[in-house]
Length: 436
Image (cartoon, rainbow, N blue to C red; front, side, top):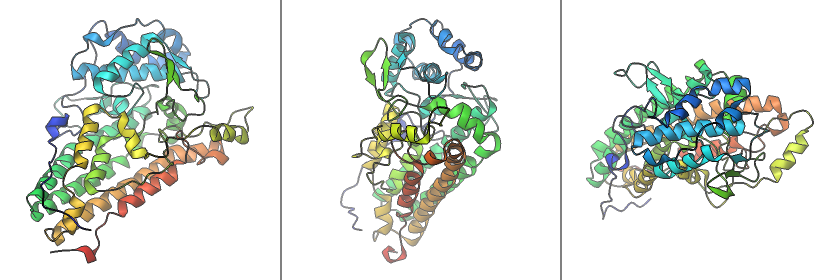
């Protein structure tokens, strides 16, 4: 591989993109616990969602909320809190009667402010990784650490420990993002300065952080039961793009009579993992295996009166995500605006993969880089195990013939995840490209 060092390339500053050197993409300040009047009615409704769902009265109760415009929500913290709350309220409205019986029109009192808040943040008006993870936590001890010993979820759909743990494990992973991202930008600056020693040091730091993320992700099994997750939590994450039960999208009353098509929430919407991919030069090939939201919503279970062939026919008629793009690039549209812009800037930054192979690299730099690649591959292996446990196995018990047939974007999730893992390993720098 030829790597040009003739021109220094700009390295993005974390601060310019609302990224904290300690917390990464998590908000710099802890999320608000509630909004001021009159928006606190959304807080009150969100707190009661588990009761509404249990009583079977969610839509009736949510219809009573006033239509509030987001005009007076001016700070990032207020907008983030509102976005999280409205995501919970809207997705409850859609899915509270089961994943095979969604509503097709969101009422204006929920849809209008959701759209307004989303535009302000540069997000999509759909439940996202930001909704349920990034803006949905609090510290038990306000002065304590940002880890699983000191975190609680602000809101859940069902009020169960399993759901809260699902969110909090991911928050704890994101909380490691600051030092990881700082290591990346420091290493890139070192490339500009032709400093292989710093590149080696910072790549080893990145590898250590990814290893810590892996230690956290496997803790998912401790307090999140797969059956509870699959049956009682996962359905609420469903979106309305490539979803066979909502083939015509969703109408946002008071916004537009034309339906919108948005994919549901996915861990793939994490800016952190994509940042590491970009930094290591991991290339994801264009593919039509783009399971939009399939981390959370696989094929609908077969119920009485439906045979596997009936559902398979529905799936066969459901369009996939555009095959000309990759899932990885598509989900960026579901990230906050500034985080998307950071990823774009990072793509123009110095190439670590190119540097460690160049005459200016070193054995130590290559070793540190390879450590980071292998750490990321291992993280993805553990993630595949989680998807198998929480999605594939429960789905196979419901409808064996559909367990890995298609995800919500029109394809099987397992081949996609394994492809991403393989593409990660391909970035390893071999000995015959080493320069001391």
